[in-house]
Length: 132
Image 1 (tube, helix red, strand yellow):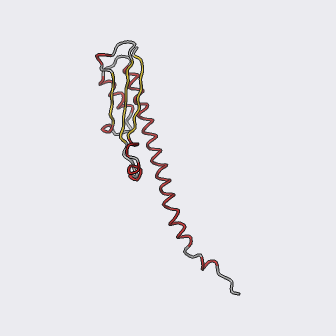
Image 2 (image 1 turned 180 degrees about the horizontal axis):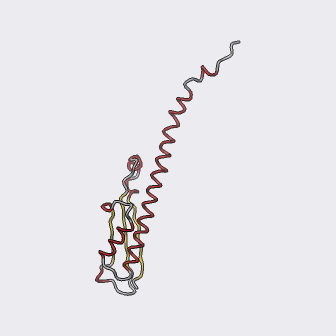
């Protein structure tokens, strides 16, 4: 009876295992990194919409509100921000509600995520406060 040499029989096994498992680990890693960036961007636009609403309730102009939102979101690209302020500055009276909505289009680092769900990459935050 001849004993098999395990080292010779399993010479290519680790390369095959690596080829099967490595893409899964890379996708998992890319997903974690992308999710972290998206979550950071969402937190930034949420804070920016709150800052804009706080300025709006004390009677500031739309330009001041927009400047405050842009200064609160310096880590984002300003050309990808969309800001909606309602009602108009002429209709803002004490006791009425004002709404500031900030949207941001996130471009993924890894385009695999964009191909899977392109609509999920538009982040939106809306804050409503009563004018003083």
